[in-house]
Amino acid sequence: MVSLSPTRAPSRDAPSSPPRARHDVSPLRRGHRRLAMVYATPLAVIVAVLFVVPLGLMVWMSFNHWPLLGASAPNGVTNYRALGDPLFLHALWFTVKYTVVTTVVLGLVAFGLALLVQEGPRGVGLFRTVFFLPSAVGLASASLLFYGMFNTDSSPLNAAMRLLAGGDVDWLGSSGNALISTVGMITWRFAGFYMLILMTGLHGIDPVLYEAARTDGAGWWQTMRRVTLPLLRPTIALMMVLSVTGSLLAFDQFFILTGGRHGTATIVIDVYREAFLSQDLGRAAAVSVAILVGLVIINGAQLRLLRRDS
Image 1 (spheres, rainbow, N blue to C red):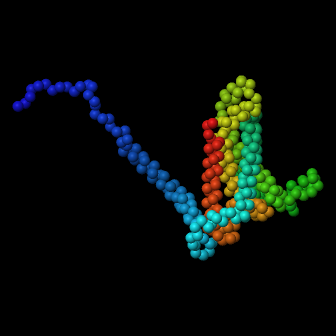
Image 2 (cartoon, rainbow, N blue to C red):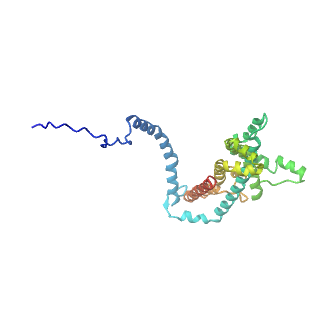
């Protein structure tokens, strides 16, 4: 028997059906993701072939006795124990000293040039171009150019020194002279490049902040310390990472100018010496791994210190 009682209408307060999950991805979006993976795959393959695979091979070689010619054999951490060799320690100390001096001198010169050409009268763009032009010269070419200038027999610098000081200077004949000479060459080569980086950061600072500082009676040094340098910290961090990394990996300039003689061997020259002169690729790989770990730690510490908000 069919009931004739009226059907109760659903209450407005009754809970509605659960909403459709938001994580459902539309077919169009899934298609975009697949297309992005297709575009990214060639680059991922290139990175794997040119970076990940060689890095893994280098780490594997560092745990083996791996002569340049001949069969390899595992030797555990023997190659890493050899990092206490006096030649390597001297190369490490010289590289650290060169890195500190170069980073300080290059940073100060580049910052001074950036302040000089940041803004000014018409024609300041010409000075920016002149300061940046040495960056277009390759490092090896710049090293050969300065080798001719530092050569004792035909040095134009010595011709000037004879007039000023009455004698010649052996620019590359000692560790100290070679260090100063190389830092001068690197400053000439890279100051314009870092000037451009710092000038970009300076242009990113709102001029209103400078006007407010002048209104409060702040002088040049107070404005520099309270406004410019704090807001320039990310740019300074980038410059220091590039400078420290390039200095720790220095090879071309010392290999061309001094050949690593007179106590001017860097850690990368030590890698070259172990791999191709001593023909010990395992030892060279261990030094390379140590350099890589050191770079990661140093650059991470720099970014943490220079880019913190405090």
